[in-house]
Length: 165
Image 1: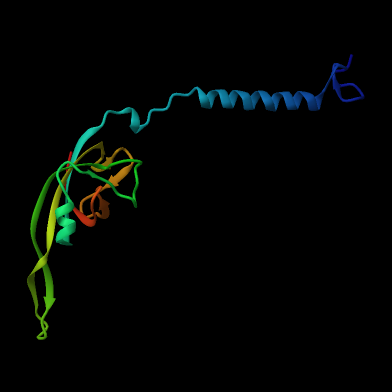
Image 2: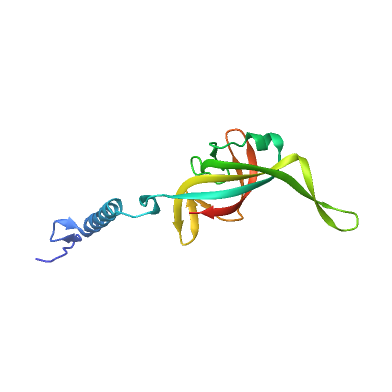
C-alpha cells in the first residue's frame, strides 16, 4: 500500500489539502488559546503612589482666579485620562506681573491690578518609574510642562513648577 495514492489521498482515505487545512486551524487555535490565557503584568497591577505637583497659572483674570478653589477636581481635556487628574489641595493667589518694554529698549516688571498669578497644589495617584511621573497610570507629567487645565468653574493654562512622589 502506498502512502499517497493516485488521487492524492493519504493512505487512500484523506486528501493532503484536508490535512493542511486541519493543521492550519489547529495552529491558529493553539495561538489563540495561548494569547488569551497568558498572564501579562502591566503597570496597572502595581499599587498607585501619591503624587503631588504644583502648577503656576500666570496673569489670570480675577474672575477665573477666584473660581479656582481647594477641593475642586482638576481635569485636562487635551491629555484626557478618562477622569480627574487629581484634587486641588492648595490655592495661593499672588500679584500678577507683566513684562513691559520701554522705549529706550529696557524691560521692566509691572504689576497687573486686574489679574492674579495663581499657584495650585494638586494631589493625585500614579506611578513613578525611572524618574518619570505617570498620573492615573497614563497621564505623563513633568516639570515645566505647560497644560490647559480646567475645574468645574474655570479654565486656565498653567506650568508645572514642582512634582513630588
